[in-house]
Image 1 (cartoon, rainbow, N blue to C red):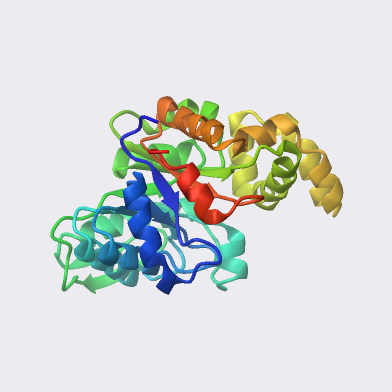
Image 2: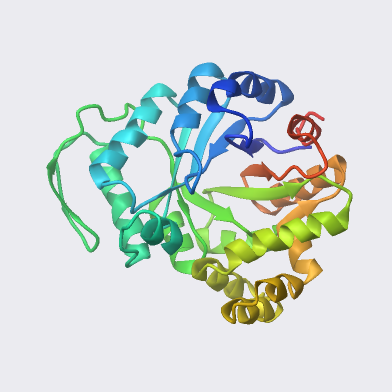
Length: 319
């Protein structure tokens, strides 16, 4: 496999954070260059990376993504700066709008004007990292007289979680690139065109390493239904041209027919969005993302019918 960077999603399910040290060492030995966390309903986005940064200096670190809503602007700046200080030159920060379920239903924060909140948080972070006193009035919030006591010596790259043209263009114009999610390799050029040239493109890629296609599709359909019925992802796939293919699922879901919604997801959609097959086949499918323009592929292993460590080894770029 030929790609400059090749990442994997952490932390691993069923492995405590305290037990991850040997996993991080093996990841680096196997040729993985990056570990990327998330911040949804498991750990926070920073703690697994802080451990990886301390335990395995060969790994690049990234979070995809931290919601712009769930921390105040100053606290978020401090968290990012601390990671940049702990792992200088190795940390990439992913910022995104997240979604209404995460922000509003789980954290009790109104999910309003997500584009503006993400844009204004990006701009505030860039100003705060200079170490100058910042008074910033914007659409989403007001910060008065904040000065970061420990600004990062080298501010980390900031990538924006982006699903549609407006956010993709913002990622290209004001950030260091974009983080993509729930897309096929064939969708990458469409997104990359909006971001523009010379920018990083990271993508979380879901992989079920099994040759049992029926099982992989059954699991994949459940994953797709869970995500693509969230409005932001639904609009993303309408924009990508999958509206007709996915409309029966959206209709069934809206009618409360969860079982029916799963049954009408086409196999070709499932196969495109949730990779499956032998280890070798999955590696080739991952490489297709890199060939399409993804600079940092970060696989997310969904282990069915295979031990997690075997999957990590089998999907490694050095395999």
